[in-house]
Image (cartoon, rainbow, N blue to C red; front, top):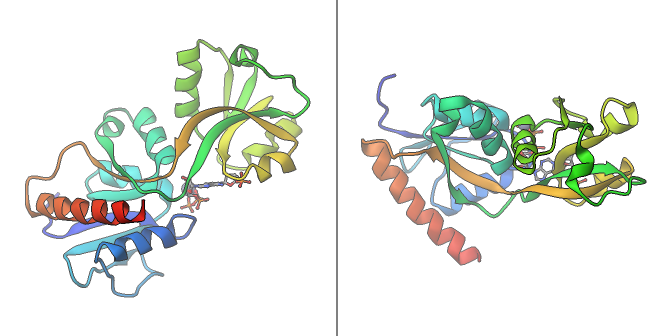
Length: 223
Ligand code: PRT
Ligand code: ZN
């Protein structure tokens, strides 16, 4: 790939992280030419452009060098780090960003008398996060079946396709609506700035350092 002289940041095109991510970037002094319906947003002041994509694609775009940085949930980054081999291991979390907070949790049917992870032995757990769930089960020595679903994980126990679920929880309303109860928190998540392990050795590295400095200032003011 040809070296680029402009920095490229990947962020969610349309979803929970979109507005807060844009607000954060604007507080860092980055403004973009209006083309929110497009994939690409050209930066007006600094040589920093945006790529607007599905959140699930963000870690891969950084790992492949298409983008230099990304704003993505720790849950999505962590899953990629665990499941994408060498490409996954090449990424790191640079800064927590303080929005998009949620947790990745195990939930079981409300009527189940749950008191220990050992009870998950031999059970089927539905999730969109097989990497993070598998790692958690391994560290606890629990042997459970992992049923990977792309969405609507919370209805799996009622459909009889799983005994428990492992999904994102924020208010807990979705769990209650599906007669489920949160029993274990695997990961506390929020939006993070993700990037490669090492800075690019050209102007983009200097730009990233400048951006991190501004970001730290903005985050400090917020706290
Ligand atoms: O189209 P694209 O793939 O980009 O969007 P998406 O639908 O995959 O993502 P989106 O916008 O729903 O979420 C983006 C990120 O926001 C996630 O990866 C998390 O890091 C973060 N986030 C914060 C959440 C939630 N809170 C959240 N509550 N992501 C999803 N949820 C869902 C959860 O999956 C469950 O269905 O909301 C439901 C639970 O919410 P409560 O309040 O009922 O507990
Ligand atoms: Zn997604």
